[in-house]
Every structure is written in C-alpha cells, then in structure tokens.
Image 1 (cartoon, rainbow, N blue to C red):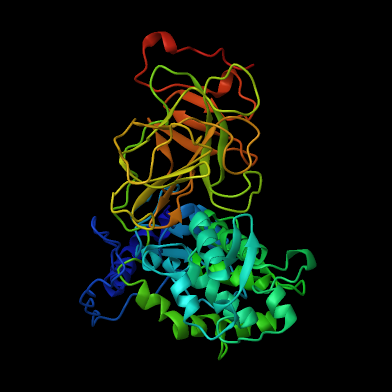
Image 2 (spheres, rainbow, N blue to C red; image 1 turned 120 degrees about the vertical axis):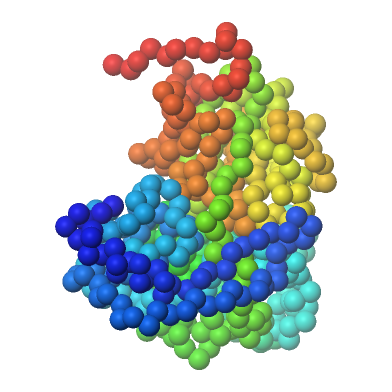
Length: 507
C-alpha cells in the first residue's frame, strides 16, 4: 500500500535502506540428502558512504521475514494496511520475499525485546534435525532421561522415543523439546531430579498429566499456538501465569514467539525474562547441548525463500467422481476441533451410501508425485522431492487411510496414483473421509496463508468459524460442511460433462 503524499520523498529513502540491507541465505535442498550443512555465506553488501535519507516522522523500517504477508505485518505492528509504505505493491495476502523493506507507521508502545532467540528451523522439524538421533543423544546424557521409560500401549517406551515420535507427528523439532525439558526439570543433566521435576518434566503442573507423554503433548501444543498464531496474525500479545500481559515486538520471528508463548503459560514476567535472557536461558541450554541454533539453521533459514511455490496439485480423488468438502482449513495434526494449531488441512469425503465409519470402496489419490516415507495407523506421508526425508522440501500428509490396499513405505507414486481407501482409521473421526495437509521444510503450510492450498485450481479460504471455509475456482465455490450437502459437492475440472452441475443460487 502507498501513502501518496509521501511516495516521492520516500523513494530515495527506501533505495538507501535496500542497499544497506543484509543479504539473507537461501535454502537449497539436495535431492539425494537432507540439507543439514551450512551453505557458504554470501559476501556482505557494501554500506553506502552517503548519508541515508532520514525516515519520515512517525515511521519505522521493517525488513520482512520468512512467511510474512502484508496482512500479517500490519497485524504485528498494530496498523492498517494503508499505513505501510510498500514501494513494490505486494499482494497483501501472498507471501513476501524475506528481506523486503517496508516503512510502517509507529503506533506501538511497550513490547517485548525484539531480539531473535531461535530461528524458525529450530522449532519446526526442519532439515536441521533430519538426521538427529534422539535416542542416541539421550543415552549419552548423565541425567534421568537416559534411564526413564514409560508404559505405553505398545509397552515400555523411553522418554527420547516419545519426544521424537510426537515431534515427528506434529512436526516440532525434538531438540527444542529436549531443551525445554532440561530448563524446566534438568532431565538431561540431573540423574536424580525432585518428584515434581519427574512428574512435570516440561514445567506444566497438573496432577493428572504427570507423564512424559502428556507433558510433551502440552509443550508441543503451546509451541504450535505461538508459532502458527504469529504466522497467521492471530497472536500479538502474551499473557503470563500471573495474569499480566505484554505486547509482542513486531520484529520477532515465529520461532522466537513460539518459545516465548510456551514459557509465558507457566512463568511470571520476571522468571520468563530469566528463562529467555538469563545465564541458564533456553538459548544457552540449546547451544550447550546442540550448538548455536542460528548456525545450525544456516542454509535452511529462511524456511520460505523468495522462489518457493506450491507444486501443481490435483484434488486427492479421481476424475468423474463427486466427492464432498467436509472440512475447511483446520488443524494439520491432532484434534480437528481445536483452533490452536496450524490451519493447514482440508477434509474430503467420498461418495457414501450411509453415514458412520468403515472403509470406502473408493480410493484417495496422490495430489502430486512423490515417495512414500510413512504409512501406518491411518497416516500416509508423501515426500515430493523423493529424497526420503519428510523434513525437506514439499510433503503431503494424508490421514484416515485404511490399512487394506494402502501404499507402502518406499513406493513411488505418480500424480493421481492410488494411495488407499478413505476410512476412520488413525485419530479421531466421526465419518469416512481423508484429511490432507502440506508441509514445507518441516513447517505446516497454512491452507489460507501466504502460500494458499490450491488443488485442481481450487484455492482454499478460511471460513468465519473454525473448520468451515471454501474452495474457490473462478466462479465455482464449494462450501465446507461436516455433514455434506449439495453445496459441499466437488469434482475434478477435467471430469466428463455429465458430472458437472449448476447449483441454484441461494436466496
């Protein structure tokens, strides 16, 4: 957006700012192995010797970060879109290349510190952790984690295995979870922690949730609320355990906000500051055990670079079949009814003769070509770059795929190949359907975010309420409804003519 009265005099100011801006490293993913090593650093841009043109009164400069859109920048700064001076006139809803310069009207008062404490790659299960062996790491530690096991449905399971597997499912980096565990309870360093430290290993004190499984699930949930709440523009303020609150600095990144948000749930302001900036802070602990998070993320951050585009994807079912959009954008993993994660998933139901659960005779298909890297308990994960790591590049995650006639790990699927039968298997489900979501470099990609979910030309949009929403393709609009109705019907555009229909406009 431009403010016309200041447009001309700011052109020179922006030019100087752009020349002085640091160059951000790009993420390149090798098709044969995960990108876990740092890329060579670019030569720094020379700083101009001329005196920079001062910023206009009442404005501050902002350099865009991974995942930013004009809409989210406006929310973070507490301004309207027309109070941001954007010389490039970006689409307000689409992702902006990291490092783009903006001038934003200054309206905020006291906020958190603007320091970036963790890159995004340290919080999501990114390429930096693709080769991380949590069990081997835990076995080498002198603390309680090296010997602890917990009874799960499959038998005794180590704390490291629980943390790794839950991190994989929710796509949260196991290193950040282990860092939080050490800060809150000393499980990595202390072989004999106190009883409360054993029960509440992640710092969440609740008597009926005293296990690694529940504590890790809580920690993951808080990290996702912070990370994706910031990414979506829903979260702008922290509320601490003592009831006080503080506005988040608009200069923060999603990874830092995720950790800030988690700590605010169990700490007052003073102990929260100590946990972030003190001598034994989370960044210090992470560096001690795993190395500097920003050095690990070199070549990976920013997760979303300027050239990232969604590959062409088809609706996940064959042509000439009428399916139903039963779920608009909702949580990628976990309970579909909790509006606290990444709104990255869509639900589709095949033609059904009756309601209830079971296995459909129809097949869900591969929206894009790739290699199957996970297939169990209703879940199928397709790695689109084919390198075998779901932490790198584009990945499709399917849920509720029946075990019978399902693809196997290692299978390579062409676009539109059969994946399996929609069912109720895996997770909570009230009816037969398939759930599909996208990840990129370990981050869940919001369905109605800066890289919108587009399937066979249909673009996803959030609804007024959670789990509602639409898919739109030109003049065609399909409206989600869990029960399925005339307005939820959707077909592939290349289907035969007799499968098309013209709905009667609503009155």
